Amino acid sequence: MTTTEPTPAVQKSSEVLLSVDGLVKHFPIRKGVLQRQVGAVQAVDGLTFDVTQGETLSLVGESGCGKTTTGRLLTRLLEPTAGTIVFEGRDISHLREGQMRPLRRDVQMIFQDPYGSLNPRHTVGKIVGAPFRLQNVKTEHGVKRAVQELLELVGLSPEHYNRYPHEFSGGQRQRIGIARTLALRPKLIVADEPVSALDVSIQAQVVNLLEDLQEEFDLTYVMIAHDLSVVRHVSDRVAVMYLGKIVELADRVDLYENPMHPYTTALLSAVPVPDTKRKGKQERIRLQGDVPSPINPPPACRFHTRCWKAQDICKTVEPPLIQLAPGHQTACHFPENATPEQEATATAAAKA
Ligand SMILES: Nc1ncnc2c1ncn2[C@@H]1O[C@H](COP(=O)(O)OP(=O)(O)OP(=O)(O)O)[C@@H](O)[C@H]1O
Image 1 (cartoon, rainbow, N blue to C red):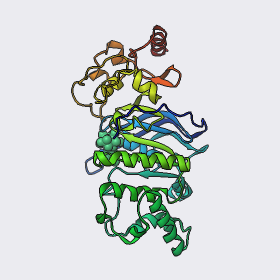
Image 2: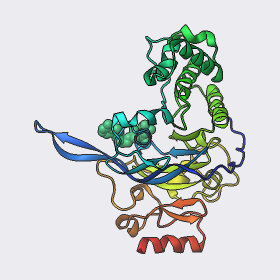
Image 3: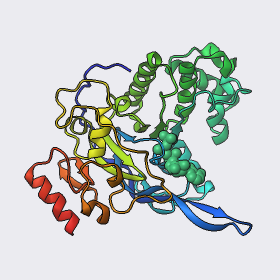
Image 4: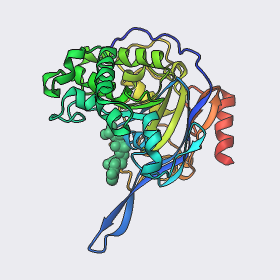
């Protein structure tokens, strides 16, 4: 990844493309011959956010915090336990597979592993052409032409049509996956760690490609990453997740310069780029212990077991995700870098 200073976030359309309200996904844990439910993995536990047309919203957090599950819910590869997902004004939370078919064109996912996500026995032509064939939208000749155009679009050659995935490097394979994703001209792409399996030298190229494609086709991205440094340059807004919940959601510049949740401060302190503008703690914060289990998460504020600011109220009252500044939501009783008014707002929300 490049480490140059990011350009300020561009003002984009404010039309909401995707709206998520109280989204929950609990995976039941079953035991015994009767397969009785004995508990649940609370992978995603009450997410509420909007994604506007043409923006990049990044979901960030440590392994196991529920990012991939969220991505799979948004693309409806999973069915939510509760809550709603509204895409272009239509509630898609519980559509059945047949009803989902038209939506599969509009909402696509890019996967982390460019090695595992391409069938090694299929040619590039078959892989990238699969969406056309599945949706039955072109003749075989039309598919070939369209695939070759897509290959050129992502920086590959039309001659690659008859080659197999093993003949390509990791970066090229991710380009093949991106070409397949673009085939049906989706509106929303959920990109799950799209560059984390690639060499650092290749990561920036693939990120640049995603940005160019976004501009060309007015794409909307939900970008999933475990590391705040990866999404620094591409996000318009960033949602920080911890144990199935969003703890902070803010415009990119605001989040990096003025983090308000202690967990965000800790994540940012691990970002190697020196950031003179960032308020608050500059030294590396090493969080104590591991992330608790999502089977039995800590009550109230889920971060309290690892938070250096935690007080009694953090163990008994869950802080709601509230707006503490324009475009900046935080779920914390004792936000960092807060003005007296912001502290008062947080206190009032806890009492409400
Ligand atoms: N199908 C499933 N059945 C049971 N538990 C699951 C399932 N899928 C995910 N989980 C659990 O849900 C929690 C959240 O997982 P998820 O993969 O969404 O997290 P993540 O933030 O994407 O992590 P990573 O960065 O490691 O992929 C984890 O504890 C995971 O073990």
